[in-house]
Length: 332
Image 1 (cartoon, rainbow, N blue to C red):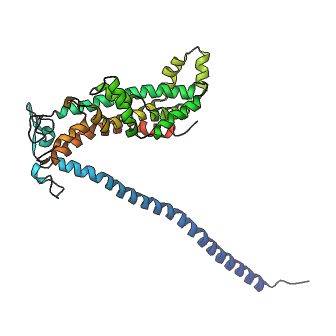
Image 2 (cartoon, rainbow, N blue to C red; image 1 turned 60 degrees about the vertical axis):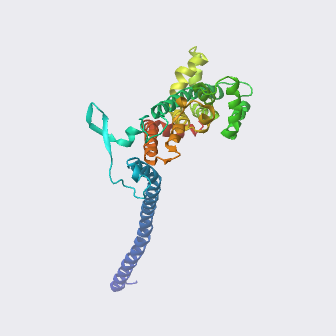
Image 3 (cartoon, one colour; image 1 turned 180 degrees about the horizontal axis):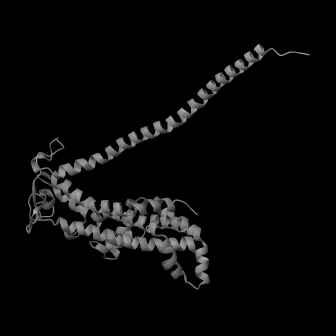
């Protein structure tokens, strides 16, 4: 019969406890270290990313800040190196409200009789509204024609549809300057040179808009077409009452892109328009240059005024713009 030595049992228990404590400490240290690295790495990456994005954002905003500050300077300070104007000259916006004052440069830009703006009596206000009018008409017509073409390419089955669509997309590979001469010759044959119709008509159709809306319409379930046809809906009814309302984010996205592109268009109006009364805003900005120098402060005030419609358009439709790009990039 064997006997158990209590002293040896106690010693074994103490050794096991020491081993467990030691192992537990090493395991705890092994577990805590990766956890610390796991939480520290995303935080470090996010912080660095925010710093980089902030720096890039400041670089992008810097030219706009310089433009705005220069537009407030008097004529004598426009060419100086200091960014902050020493004084800002103001004047009442209207004579009936003398308390409402705005910078003088912004009022003088629209004053065609002011010799500091130009020396030819150019009506800058007319150019402003010409650009808005042309960009609005082009946006409306291009959204209409592109949506109808996209509906045909995405919701209607017909022979050779995909091949025609590829040929349609191939036109996007051609630079705009290459197509300018044929378009100009067509406008000459139609007697549309030096007219708003000549500016609007060639830009009323575009392969990019058709491609964007086609990709967006393909995300809409085809079961809606079948249900509408069972109820006796025609293709036009299907397009106008079902597909078009569901494609609203894509339509708004195309509207923004088209409006901005035509609002800033320079070469096509320069080729087409001969009468100064029909000039668009980019062409009107040229009149701030003269043989006696450039009115930099007036030019920056005019440019600041010209970007206001685009900023308002983007601010109010930003939600639809992001949604339209995201949904249009995925084929459902």
